[in-house]
Length: 256
Image 1 (cartoon, one colour):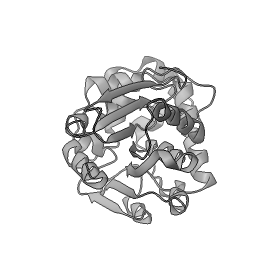
Image 2: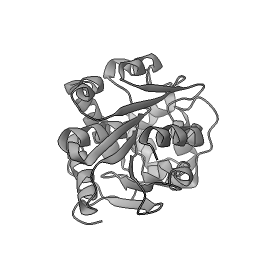
Image 3: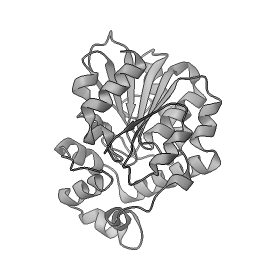
Image 4: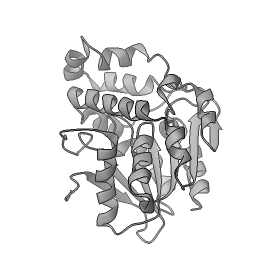
């Protein structure tokens, strides 16, 4: 960590094309672990723990543009421009905000399981409502076991998924209070302007990768994006449910 205060993980050849991976709400850089073996064969893969997540310390605020500003410092620190950026779920909002604030840093943008607007949000699974909502969320959060965390992660998958220990550890890094702030910040970002509206004014190639069985977001809403790859039988977690296929779509898109 330096001035940006974020924990950064790097894999793959430093001379390869730079690929920045941004995790979703409450997760961490480790959420990409199953994809890194494919991505890092050709790319210089850079992963961050956003504020309050994984090994990065909590922040006073979690607004999406503020998170993007910290990620921009990570790239500035390395002198990188025109980077391929991929975000899973709400990580796609941070990637979009990065392109809005610092367009010279973003060469392409891939959104994986990223909801386009609040009207596309589906009723959430019971386990997530218990973990995240009052009045019991804060109490359960403090005593949640690894099994509970796995259930929470897998609740938005459409097929059985093996959640690695590293992913569980990354999710355990965020506090209940920080998680609630992150979710509110993401909602505020979408309510201010939908993602398709934001993307329409950006001069950056965009690919959306979505599962056609996503229980979190209405899969048909993905058609609002300019270019979409739908993954049959996959839910909200392509990065865990189909890591090899998702990696191939991502690498083909960025030309790596």
